[in-house]
Length: 364
Image (cartoon, rainbow, N blue to C red):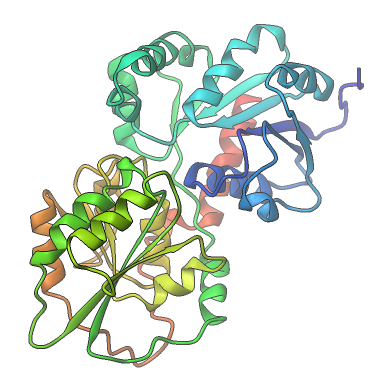
């Protein structure tokens, strides 16, 4: 067994299920990368070495792959961390079950989505999730959440007080640099809409596509929609596009290495999600200077909107209302590219990292 670090660094281990291109994974990697290395000895443990986000991990951070879940406890015991940080409820549950075997460690879990996401699934998954939230989350030393709505739902379930509101960090400088690497959009009489996310029920792309035949733009403007992402519903969405004769209007573009350039080239970002936590794609679109139309039920979207200006972020209650708002838009006539960031400063990475550091030091 390795000897416990006795210098002034706090030994902190971050745990991820994989490097899948999800918002929760990206947030945790950002938090890990930007913690001050003069204060923290940082390591990453991942259950499965798969997914495109591996390249985002700072090269100086040691990465251990479990391969099998049964090795997780063994690896953590070898690392002897002062603090363990994880994200996503199933992984959080697993780690909190191991807490009694790691008596010297403090556990910080990050809840990235409203618990109702799991409860809506019904069946045994809903029952296991409710049990985990009620009996395991109180064992955490700190529960991080990017949204007050998530905290409110957890309060209704377990009622404990060990919560900290931590907005998702947005690396605005990096995003805008990536935007500048791409060519400006070609000016044309076409309104460019964009969606991004896993192609699954949660994101609501199916109901948006089904409503789009009713979209008639002002004057003789045309419109197009690009959807970024992959997932289990790709084939169903392709069939839906054909069913509504929207071929040529809607493109399922998959994963892009530089999605921010596409965000900056769009006239509007759409979020038709059925549920969310605090949607990263909205924050990143605003950082690209692209306004957003979002469903009210999409997690903490109202918490973002109260910090934005004018019509930078429009919230609607139904898909029909989203179509009405889309109809009001005209093709962008930007005099400069990229447009100015619309993102409120409270989501800028440096401010979030400063708060995260404070939370960790207070829990150590």
